[in-house]
Length: 436
Image (cartoon, rainbow, N blue to C red; front, side, top):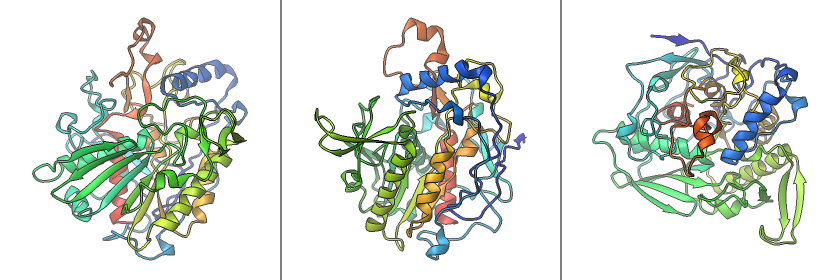
C-alpha cells in the first residue's frame, strides 16, 4: 500500500475541537518574481465563481501562527451521542494520505443518485479514478470505520442539518451517499426543496438530513439559493434569526462559513434599511471584524436555541482551493486542472487560507459556554489538488471558444468530486460525533 507522509507540523491534541494542529510551519513565498502569476488565477476564480480572492500582498509572507484551542467537551462532561472516546494522544486531523485500492472509494459515483451535477466528475468526462483511492490515516491512531447503520439509528426520529455555503452542501451530499450505499438494502431518501432549505427524508428511520443555504450565516443579499453571484456583497448586522428560525429543532448542526467573506475589500454591513433601498445605512468593516461579528452572532444563537445535554454543534474549517500552481512547485499559470497527484510537502499551506480568520474563530469559540466541535479539514485537504471538480462538472453557462481552448480558465478548483475528499470530512465528523 502506497503511503504519502503528509502530516501537519503543529503539535497533536486529543480535544474534539482543538485547533492546535491547525497551523503548520509555512514556507515563505518569494513574491516579487511571481506577482503577476499569483494574481491572475486568483482574479480568474473571482470571475468564474463569484468568490473573490484578492490578498494584501504585504501579508503573503507567511509566518508560523500561534498555537490555539477552542471549546471542548471538558467544559460540559460527556457529549450527546458519544459512545466512546478517542484514545489519548490521538489527533485525527494530523496524519497522512494512504493509497487504499481495497477499501476506497466508499461508494461509486454511479451508485448514488443524490450527487449534485457539479460534483459528478466521472459522468462529466473525468477518465481517471486515482483521486478516489486515498484514505486518511492519523499518525497515532486510526479513524473508526464509518458505520451508516449506527448513524441512521442515532438519527432515528431526529434532524441533522448542514448550514453554510456550497462546500457544506457538498459535505451534505457526501453524507447522503454514505448513508444510502453503506446500509443494508440501500436506504432511500426523498428530496424536497423549499427556497434555501433542502431536506432528504428517510421514512424507514423517520430521519432528515438537511442543507440550509446561508453563506454568511447572517442575512445577506446573496441569500438566494440559486442566484447569488453578487460582487457587491452586503450583510445585515445581527440578523442571524432570519435564517436561524429554520434551524430550530435540529439535533445535530454542522456550520461552515469562510469563502464568501474573502473579497479582498472591506465588508459592507447593513445597519438600517433594506438591501434594495437607494438610501441605507452601511458601515464598512475589515474582513476580520465582520467575520467576528458573524461568529459571535452564531454562538449567541447556539446558546439560546440549542441544548448542550441533547444536541451537538460542529464547525467545519476552511476548504482550501488550488488556483496558483506555482505555490506547490509547478510551472506558473496553472491551477487544479489536469492535476492527478497529491502535494507531498507536509508543510504546504496555500495563500488562500487566511490565518487571521482562524484566530478570530479561536477568539470567539474560546469564549463560548456551549461546546462547539471544530472539524479541522483544512490541512489534510490542502494536499489534495488532484480531487477538485475542475472541468468535469455541469457547466451552467455555455463556454466560449476561448475557454474551451484553455481549460485552466474555467476549471473549478473550489468544489470537490464525489466520491472523494468530502467523504473523509464525514468520517472525521462521524469520529467526533461518537468518539469525542
